View 1 (cartoon, one colour):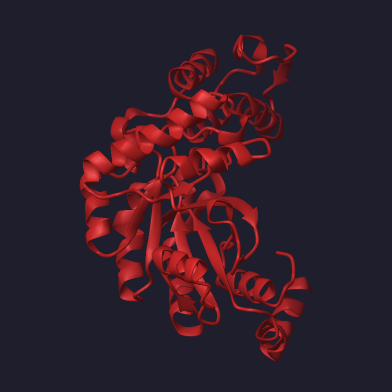
View 2: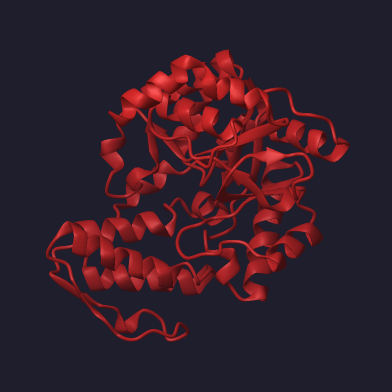
Length: 338
């Protein structure tokens, strides 16, 4: 009944009419991974994967019924005070998966949709998936029936708790608790944390899973096709939960590494939101500005309007279906909360 009601409202054109009554705005869409069969990576990437068929249909929709623009064009509109073209959309990808290059890029180019790809630098350089994928896999595939988080990390204050791993729901709860701790770590401390849990649960992702991350050659080709490469930190922590020095290192080192390897300025940043809130703060906005970033996108839901702060822009979740994307976009442009 709910899907039928949405289709009826969309077909009536009421949302589109309402959208015309609102001021100019742009929708920044947040994607991660695109695969022919998302179920193949369910234990690692979880629910962040779009099917190739759904993604193709969504990009065709954007090219036909909306106005895709680049992030650089977005900056120009915001800085110059110009109105956005009606129904503007910006496509972004987080993390830096190989499928962004192998699967998504040909589709984007086919429909002339520009995109920005935010890269987790340590994962690209060391060919390993971001830590949430590693922990998810460890908790889903372990044969252990319980886990105690007393050894999570001495730097993080928490009461020891024993977790029952006898059901998928129990495992998910334990996984989320581990994520709450891990997101507050970066660099070496984060890697030690993840390896410790993998050892305790006696399971880990196979080494070949590293092939799921892009290479610098692929990133250079993305840029060569007119797309934008940005930073998604070094090691995917929650930037607002880190100490100031650790956050500074994540901002600066990821920018420097990418600029050195790609031979081009890195002006755009995406905040990871692996667990806990907030995932950005006034302090991180000031840090990103001081280091020369022009924009930073968050996972806070909403549109981008003239006058918005460039270093904490909102984004929209596209959903996994064509009609879901259409509903979210039309609702957002009509002023409804998505």
